[in-house]
Image 1 (cartoon, rainbow, N blue to C red):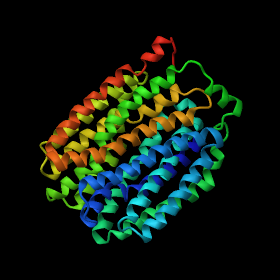
Image 2 (image 1 turned 90 degrees about the vertical axis):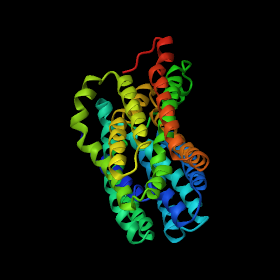
Image 3 (image 1 turned 135 degrees about the vertical axis):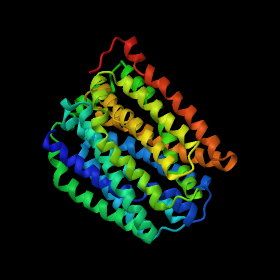
Image 4 (image 1 turned 45 degrees about the horizontal axis):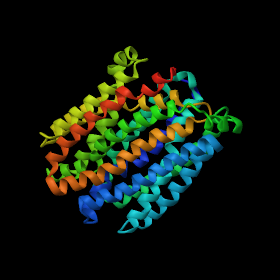
Length: 392
């Protein structure tokens, strides 16, 4: 792996560690501390994700226009400003305002990080995106474990730590990301040409595979929304719930050697990686239907994590393969906004389902929804085949 990619990995690690102090606890904070219903908490999380969709699209566009460094710095500065506000005012309705801004500013950062990884190591293929994905999940392993302890002591400190980590991320990006710009900004004439491409088959393929991401993330988002509150109702403490995310993050790192033989075997068969991952994700929600203690939730998280390891890194890889020259940022913005769109719909959908029908009907519905995500995984390249287009 080139040394330049390590700057992105370290930046993503710090970013995600800070974020994961807050996002797994959002629903719990609104429900248990602010006294709001799960449906209302879901609505607020929907606003956060809706802003994230806009941020993803803007971030991808800015990457193509002004480069990843400037786009990322803009997102970081907006995030720091909103986190200062959230640290000072985290009652109702201030929490809603600042959480929405956080969704938008964070959305700007992520597609640029992935696009910059692809531009910095084009020959790396899936490896470049898998490296960023691993960094994210190391942060997910560290953040929630510490957040559970901090929240048990005093919840207000969660906001302060998140702010501190983002200030650290700012200095990492300021000092190192600028040197990654070489070759990542397409000339204006190339951007213009890519907009005028008559054959839209790659873009249609991207939209099809993005629909799979929406469905999977609709389900996945329940872990930080309805499932988080459900675990509290069953008697699991914040420490145990946070430990589930630590299991997720650590397993993604230490589980790489376990999945490596299959990944290598399916290196040029991304469809198989996607479908296998989706099946495991669906199975994990089937386990939750029978879960009543930490061990069962741990088993569900284990299966979910292995599914995620196959499914998630394949998506930015596909987006990078499909993207015309000069549109890598835009395509990464689309695939990231699809995931954010799932997170936007998921908490509200889950909150209404739980309030009306209960947790078990929701979980069983999620199994069906996730299995439907297999269809776009199988047919996303149909527009390419019709136009005899081959991607790397």
